[in-house]
Image (cartoon, rainbow, N blue to C red; front, side):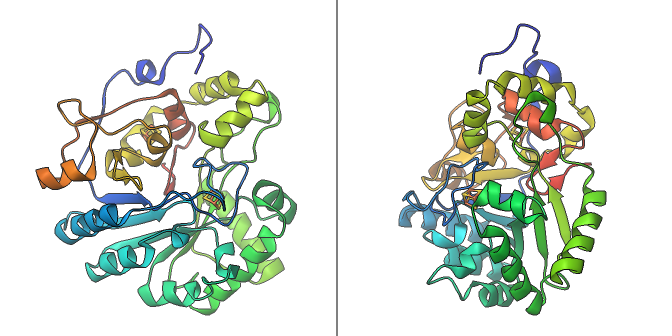
Length: 328
Ligand code: SF4
Ligand code: SF4
């Protein structure tokens, strides 16, 4: 990334190392295969991608889940995690250990041949479903995610509601701001609580659907978002916009402090964004960490500090942003 002379690096702004705490979440990217190809997708997933978990990496992940009682949450992502190798085996292993399982689902997968059983499967396994619905207005969603996606998402939520999601079973929706067409349109997500109320009211009134929590997530300038901003000549300006909204109070709640992010090749990162940018988690000797290494050490708490990049401003701007939504 080229920086204007005035733009301070994130590391400089933070002024101290970002330290790792006890690891309690494993986020696993099962592969890049997805039935959609959204404009904002930071993993550049799509129907023609073929990368997914190998059997060797899957076995290592199952072993770690089996032997790490410190893990409270397994967070499955992709691509569409449901389409990639090992999905159901990981869900069932983690549930057998009483871990919370989060599936980041695009919901439209329920309408792809071979995946129609998923709503019942999710309910049976009591997984927490986190689903993208970047806006409650049809046109905005279809522009970001593809034609017809909004209607399918609404139908899918109806199915989940009929199985108890939105009540005892947890269905969370994710909001991302629209991609900005100019500097004037740069925005951070609005306060999560207010937007959640609006979403709930609108979706109940117009579609009779309900959900538990709305998670607001900022657009991080990597992947397709970065390419888009570059094409528009807006990348540096967007980073500066995020930097101007840096909020030090968000730092203690950053997801990278308590999470390991694993890719389908068995490499380990501090977060999904670093995974996409290929910035590995480092051992105290400065070596990139892999599942092989974690298994040899028989310890998940081997990382001291987290590498910093300027897109980290995206997680620390305003109310803060993580895979669990607003930080504060
Ligand atoms: S549904 Fe999710 S993983 Fe699939 S293309 Fe869209 S943003 Fe990417
Ligand atoms: S991108 Fe966000 S989650 Fe990842 S290391 Fe930076 S601050 Fe942490």
